Length: 277
Image (cartoon, rainbow, N blue to C red):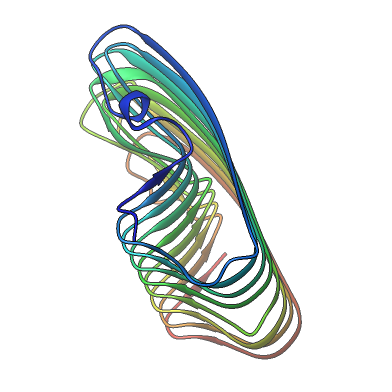
């Protein structure tokens, strides 16, 4: 099995101090049996370490057996430090597969690994249609942005899953969740996420919390989160922890959280802890 799949060259995907990097990649895989990747799948992953890193990538898989990812699945993922600039734009399409099994985190339009200062913009879109079972061992992040220090971060993510048997998320489902970290700094984190889960014959399970448009900001910083979650026509929607919609946490910064959740034609709905709106 390959160790990793990049839709940009590995050389361009690695952080390099200074300089300008531009990379664009396209991959299409049709009519295969099992696809196993021992490491991560990265569809436009960028990192600006003092320089500029801009990339776009797309991956399409159609008519496959089982799809296994041994680590992370990143679609439009970026990070930055030391005054760098990074932008990513990733698109993933999977149509007609027996299963998608991601061992760790599945991130779509996700800003992370930031420090110091810089500008980070992540844009991701993922469409899964007629994938029988979707299994995510860790978190599912869509339009999630956690920025540290003086970093100015923007994340935009969209995920649609149509016609599945089961969807199982092993940790949190975060949609348009944002946060700034550090102390007394002037960073900003903006995140917009949209998730639609439709026509799931069995269970949609989230092992921990669901955060939709939840945000928090340290003093001197700004965080804006905007999340939308749509669940339509499913056997059940079960959240083991909290369901937080447009929640702010009052950490002394400027916080704006907007969340919208629509649940329709679902046989059973359960929330194991608090429902905060």
